[in-house]
Structure formats: structure tokens, C-alpha cells
Length: 475
Length: 72
Image (cartoon, rainbow over the protein chains, first blue to last red):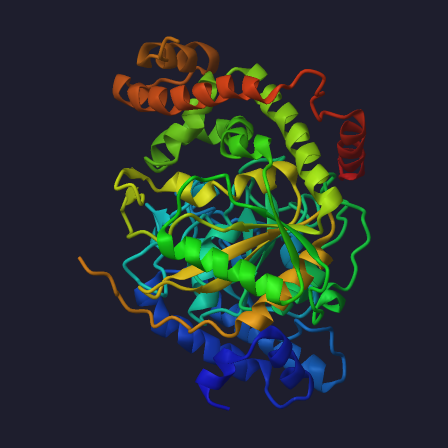
């Protein structure tokens, strides 16, 4: 099979071929390593490529599969980890100079589970420094670039994870999400990004941004692949006391269904403007959902209008707690964009943090009331498409220039506050060839229903053109 | 409402955290933190009367059990 054909296989298809021994993991791994070498000069998605480690794992996988000891859908399948995830014996930097030489002596649980499922680690992916931002313009390891237009950001903080999947330099990756950092880069890079319910996936061994807002989840090419990956990584972990004991179903059994009589709450009033093509794409997406049988209602969740603010007031003090010793001893090693965010938490009163945590309970209650009457909530994913690297302002339809970051988190942070599952699914490309997406959120631990709706939408939408890894911007 | 000043930021950093900060850095931090304090004031619009904070004894017990299982 040609390299290009191998790289176009999703996890489900590749797994079938590996199990049937039509393809060998070694062959697949070499194809991906060649792709990484070809694309990295343009993308900078990786901090560490684990070539020899991957080859050894692939060889071991092939031997096991040949001996009839198939471990499951990820056996011999290439994966990547955001470089927040501890990997024993492999550099784990957090995208930072502070941890530039850290080689952990244990694995994050999310990697342990993938490794035990037979996955092949291609490398550790670049990110916004310490996950504390939405561009992945990393001052220490270089900016990650969007495969759909390499002059633009891939989003963040899991920018490398999304860029690699989109560019076919990885097949399925792990990201983290505190205010949108799985869903937003997935949206900007034309991938699927799933933030599971808080506690669905163990945070053990993952460098924290916010103890009570961090979520770990998959970034993949298809909804089915996200379901397959969630099957592997979900479940209680005795090493993480916040991880849930809720049973883990087979998430793939929710796929392949229609949306007849599925009740969807449409939430769009968290912003009063969108790029026109983003708005058109969202309206088309709603029509598509309706054509599949869904019943749509416009709703409002008043407390969600302060979701961005609540996430900041929770995350920054927690981040300061996590970083305090490093900050006091190594402040100059922090990037100029991140250090003030950590320092700023020094002057935030504790009562503000407590009040923000109380606000989360109110947000959960208001969202739950909507979901008493509906099966899921659908929102636009972002208000704009990907800006240029270094661009700080975007133009609203009114002509006003506004900071770009709020346009990317308007719809995301609230679902981190409530902890409910939320997935970003591509809805199409803009006229400039930039990905646009919708978000589908559900009840806590109801990832199955969220995946069902996302899968039906994805199948009806049809394929999204892959990126060309060109600089397409008009300057 | 008074704006947070760089001087206040420097004093808090120094006196609460023993963390030296230049006036230039403090000015940047003051802007960042002032925005967060404004966000905090906006939370009063949510009507949080009767809403308890989600700090449960069960969560403390779960974490303590994890610590007990850790090797000494």
C-alpha cells in the first residue's frame, strides 16, 4: 500500500488491516515517521519525535498480532501525546523552558492505558506554554502552524495535537482542555476534538493548568476514532481521586444511528456577532441536523454569559498554586505571555475564587434544566476562523477591531465549568479554505449520546478536504 | 471603582510571596489582574445567594484515601 493510502486510513480501518495482517505496524509507523519528517519544517507540531521508541513498539505489536495476541483497536496504531503528559524515559516539557530537561520516571495514566492497548507513540506534541493560552505560539519551541494555512495559528493550547492529526503526521492524539484547548484547535484544524466529562479520563501524570477544570481527551479525524480512543482512556484511576467510578460503556455502540426525535437546544446568544461565513455554516449545520430528524429549539443559559470569566477566576489561582515554587525560583524562564497570567493571580482575593466555584454550581443547574427538556446543546464552536500567527485583533462585522481570544473561548469555557462532555466537529471550510466547526454538548457522562449526534452529523456532512500545508494568506 | 496599581501588585508580590517584581512587570500584571477583578465583580450579577461552594468532605476523603495508598 502506498504511503498516502496508509496515511488516509482512520483508526478503525487501519486497525482492521493490522489485525488481518494486511498491513504491518512497522510499515505504518515508517510511513508516519516519513510524513513527520516531510511536514515538520512547515508545521512545528512536535517537540519530541520518538522514532526509535515507535519502531520498537511497532515491531513488538506486529509480533503479538502475528502470534494471535491482538489487544484491541489501538494495537499497532500510531498516536501522539500533548507534551503535558508524562512519559517515562521520554522528555516531557510542558512546552516550557522550566521543564525543558524533565524526563519523568513514570507514565501518565492516559499513556499507560494507550500503551497497554498496544498503541505506538510517535512523539510529544507542541503546545501553548503550560497550556496557558489559545494560539500555540510557543516562545521556547516555536509556533505551531495551521496545516490549512501555515501563516495561521492552529489554535491552542493543544495546537500540535490538532495540527498533526489534520496534516496526517499523526493519526490520533491526546489533548487537554481547560477553557477549550481540545475543541478550539480541533475546530481550527478541521479535526474532531472531544472534551469528556470531568473525571471521565484520569488527570494523573498530566501537568496541570487547573485542578478542577482540566479535562483530558482525544483529537482525531473522525467521531468513530474519538469513540475508540475514549474506550481505551476512560475509567476510574486510583491515582486520581477526582476520576469517576461511572461505568465505561463501549462508546462505538452509540454510532451509526439517525437523529429521529432527538431534541437539540441551540445556544448561540453567548456572542452577538460572528464572521458571516461562520454564521452561515452554523445555520447550514442546524438545517442538516433537522434533516436528520432532530427537533431544534433556541435556548438561552444566562449564567453561561460569564463562563469565560468564571473559568479565569478558577483557573488562575489554581495555576498559581501549581506553579508557585517554579515561579518564585525561575520566573525569567517563563514566557512573557504566560508569566503575567500566573503573577496576576497573586492579587486575586480568595473570596473571588470561592465565588467563581459557587457560580459553577449555578451554571450546572441552568444547563441541566435545559437538558431536562433536550438531549443535547449545539453551539457554534468559534466566532471566527483562524487568525494569522501574531495577529492580536480580529475585525467584527461592525468594522470594530476586537481582541481575538474571546472569540475563541466564548462557547467553550462554560462547558469546562459545568464539566459536561462537549465535542467539536468540523462543519466545513470557509471560502478562504479555513475550517469551521460546531460544538455538541450533553449531560454528564452521556458521551454516548454526544458521539451519536456528532457521528450522524459527520456522516451526513461528508468528507472535509484535507489541508495542503501551504501559506495561503494574502498579506 | 479604583484601578489596581502597579505599586499594589509589587507590594503584594513582595510582602505576601517574597517575590520581587519590577515596576514595568507590575504594570503589565496590574492590567491583567485588574481585568480579573472586574470579572469577579460581575459575578454578583449571577445571584449566588443560597449557592454553596462545591468543596465536599467526600472529595477530601477520596484524596486522603489516595494518599494513604501511596508508598511512604
